[in-house]
Image (cartoon, rainbow, N blue to C red; front, side, top):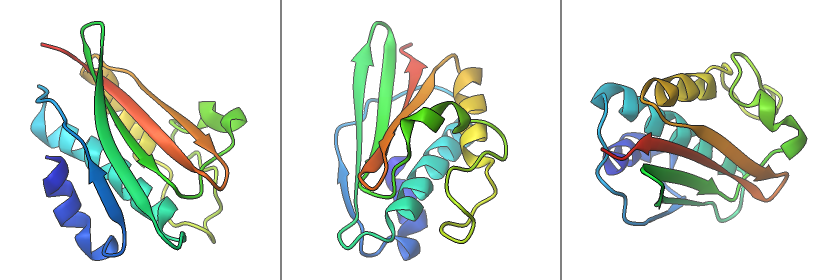
Length: 139
């Protein structure tokens, strides 16, 4: 699924280096989880697009009955004091003149992941990049 999303986004990501680690098989609604990956990877592409050498790293982790996934970029990042706003509808931490978007992508990610019984969160640092995490129950 991750490779399909990257292929779909390839025209906008030609100069980005992708590092993809082993990702376990997970279970859930294929279309909805594809949307989660699409939103998170396209955000990583968008927010790292202004870097001279953009890198996006995708990996996984396990934690007490959950499969976890992470998407890390070396892009614009964000101030952690605003992290609680990231997953709200129409909440944006960067101006429209800097990066396009509607402000609903991460809200949709949270809703889909929650619907599957998982969790979502992020860590960022301005000018350094961001990492978005989500978990799904390990069935």
